[in-house]
Image 1 (cartoon, rainbow, N blue to C red):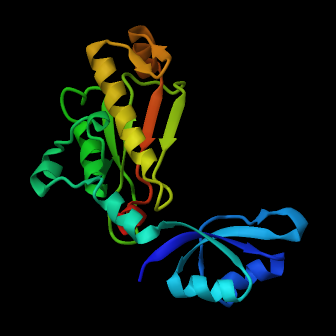
Image 2 (image 1 turned 90 degrees about the vertical axis):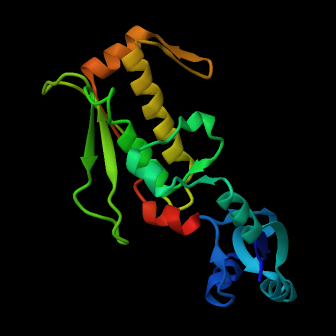
Length: 223
């Protein structure tokens, strides 16, 4: 049975609290929106019979989308490399794919960024503990040279299960930065431009740590 993302309007705060306790709805958000005349609204997921029950109980329900259909559409947008590709780290530049990377593809791209010709200024870091479902996570250090006084910059992504964009954004960042440093070129990000000299200065004098996928178990669940 299809689940819909809906906006539910209730007459008072106590009624909104009753949504989870009595109607067993999955609430899609961290807060309730206060409306005029003491009313409140919240976003949730509900199927057809639940929507009818809520309407009979006096709630106003506005349907946004079929969450199941949206989920299937998202699945079609995921890049899933074969075992050979994942082992070889053969992942194209993210900017050219127009699709989200699956968990294995994120890890493959990160490992590929540490291989020649980048291995002179990159280091793969294996996280000390595996995830709840037994997956091994990696981070990447980008730095040429060493020194105790070098500033460290940390990029973290993929914390929430449905936070798909950040892991791909950070893989794209890694690919652009390593390619620009190696080829002594600049980078343009929208209207902002970084010269080849600025890129060289960043990698030569700072330690950059990129951990793009903190919650691969959640990413698999929502794929």
